[in-house]
Length: 260
Image 1 (cartoon, rainbow, N blue to C red):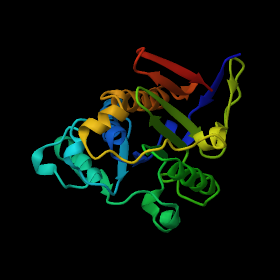
Image 2 (image 1 turned 30 degrees about the horizontal axis):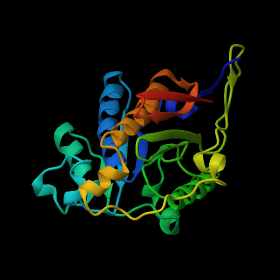
Image 3 (image 1 turned 180 degrees about the vertical axis):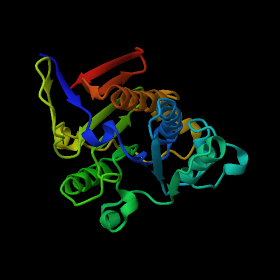
């Protein structure tokens, strides 16, 4: 029988907008936020409460970012999270929030804003992923209200022309019985699954657009971001998923699902 994961019960009929925290508003995170706008509008059209999104990033827009992030001259020097959130709020009337800092485990449990039903990480280092994994595992047993209780963590990552999306559950999600499918309540997150072999690629952040494009294809961030939010859209709309992620190969234009 095919394996699937059924959406957390609260999210089937939430009394509030589903809360989403995006950690990182760089090449992938910026596009994730734009795609979440599309997802939110789609949910609202289905009489769903929609999403409330909060974006975390400490970095500021610089000229070398322009090839990967589309922004205007007047936004140069503006914090990335603030810039992308202001756009969505201004153009679509949302009340989303931006936080001028990156996620760190040091103060995560001192700030209620760090908690959300869905966490999407768009970071380029392994250590933040390890900290997020520790955070969500502790949050799984914390006494939190339903609108901020973490349930899922979606991680995104890429190198030059390939990328991946991985969704794990925060703790175990109670599953209904099924005669047609094997329902899976616990999906390991990216660190739980691959922590022993995760490592950072050598090299420092690029100081020019030319160097950046040599390290990452111009369109790989967009492909990864779109697949991540598309996975979330199908999950929320259908109430189940048979894939916990996907692998993207931009060279061969291939997207391969990763079964639950």
